[in-house]
Image 1 (cartoon, rainbow, N blue to C red):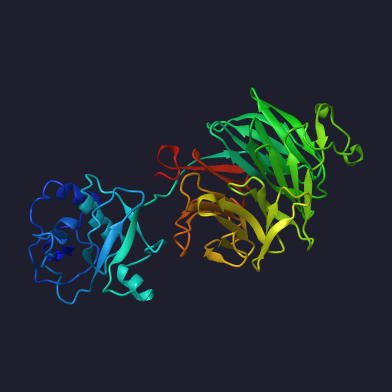
Image 2: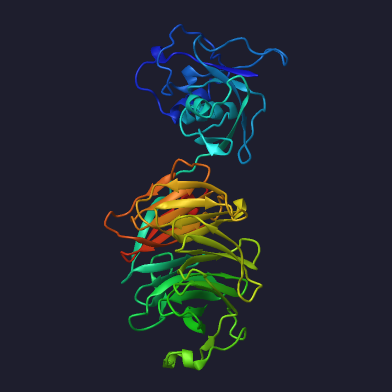
Length: 485
């Protein structure tokens, strides 16, 4: 067992140095003794520097613990620091004061790892982030101070940095990102493809008239798919810098508000209370009846109009608001409803029969799959985000609060399985970690008058939002990687 002892900062002259300066200083003197006692016991805070205030007492024999103890009256606890993602340390428990916070624990860990440059760490107990001091956590959870407490450490995530805004002429209802480009669906009925310099490199008109607005868009192999307020679903080709329509799906009787693509299939959720399954192949499925198709425009001369492969109609008549494929099983999909229901669908059944249905007591607007955790994040009209395990029809992991408007868009992190982003009618984008139930870990800066967030996509290239102000806001992490900061 290792015992941490410390010294009073009473003798420190001048301002307290930064964590980086302290570690730089200690790296050249780590073989010196840090175990000089001090009678002073004041100011038990994390402001003291690691060089003057912390020391690791190593046992002189493997079977004899160190005898130096913290000042009398200071509460201590044995902890074992573990990790699944970072450089590990010895599994031998260490004794630390219970009044330490994350910052002080990070100092201790950097010292034990002998990091040449200090790395900020965060700490989890029972898969939940340590929100305050260790003492407060122990007290609030009724833990024993006599037992060894296991604490997991992970590298702290730094906030993504705003990089740029790209502006277009109308509201942005949908955004989807791939390595080379960004595609947007707009209220003016135009799809736009952008390069990473903020230039529109291609665009196409999806409709005309009052019902022309596009509601969502999603990249797929060789192109993308979109849904419109006029009830149409379009599969587009994008080749050699040119956009063309591959097929148009007909069947929805109201706005097609959400959709997803997987392995040649498209699912769409509509304000007509239906979920529909389509083939992205013009030769797949049946052709739509011409009577249900508006007069063709000249540019659509070769477009195939297709009927859905299968249809589910919500029994309560409420609009369906979002949908996504199961992260592993392509024959399973989820949909949400303004009736507060989450449906799990069997796509092999012609009626897309729900395998299960869960009700949450609040209308659901948006959804994102946290695939590695087998969890769903559900956005509501009550300004809250529900974390739910779809394998259970009753158990919700927890509810996250912070937004002050409807949760209109959700997108999971491309690399960190515990993180996702949300966009809201309050005009803000927040980043969350499901291991931090106390709230979002970041609130990303935007113009206070920018208006509602309507679309969001998180990709290795960046986190991008779009909304009422017609702007695409781009945030990036170090090296353009949002989760390795």
